[in-house]
Image (tube, rainbow, N blue to C red; front, side, top):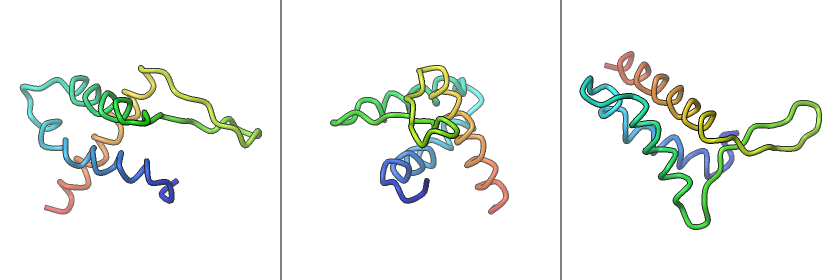
Length: 85
């Protein structure tokens, strides 16, 4: 999945929000929602996709699943930055 430019943009956006994610005054849901809104607000709009097993086809994720994907990416990025310190 790393070969798709949209995935790279998503990772960059996640890394740019790690400090906000770590801020205890800001709910993690708020940070994840900002990322999802940023991606979906692009022109053309970005999408969050999941492969349908065994079909080779892709389905668009809804808002809740997209936010959960952003939260997981934020968690992972936060841990990686902490490990690198």
